[in-house]
Image (tube, rainbow, N blue to C red):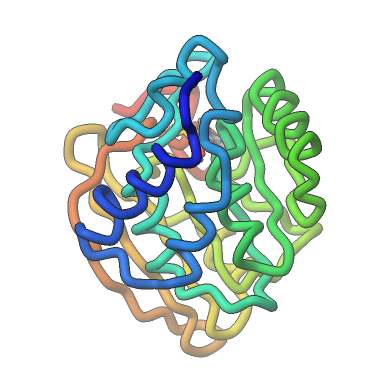
Length: 219
Ligand code: SAM
């Protein structure tokens, strides 16, 4: 039988700690959340591979390192309210929920959202909610957020996500066409002022929606 706890510890040590993830809260959360529960049972033995894996609806669960790097970049505090756009399998939302006070995650594919919700409920993570909808417009009803993490690449920063950041809030988002995405961090320094940082090259599926790529086209 696969010893998932051992694989998880090794993933945290080899893929995260040795590659520069320093935030103890992130390392502890990723040591706690059973990633094998967020993939199809047939893929469970590969859950701790250093790569993304396929999930339903032609989407992916992100590589562990990028999940950790984005959460570390969001500099979360235990009382924070977080929005995740692109819940996919629910894994990153579950990790966020081990660190922040409340996590609201939004996914455009209803079937993925339903599965993510089931997995999170089965693990008893009661501070994580999964919604169905177009997360390129954020989730105004639950705003403001101390951090917003977007797990899909947008053509430009969606205005709604800027607006839904609390003062001091951080937005972590891949920007650019497939093949040339950059991970950006925006920090709301005043009502209409945002400090911007480039966190390097990334490769995410497109953010499809009213404030993302329209009609699934990335042209
Ligand atoms: N964070 C996820 C996880 O832990 O499994 C991985 C997310 S996957 C890389 C990106 C997800 O973004 C896909 O499930 C896709 O359906 C979703 N997505 C794309 N555009 C979206 C939108 N406008 N609103 C919500 N979800 C969206």
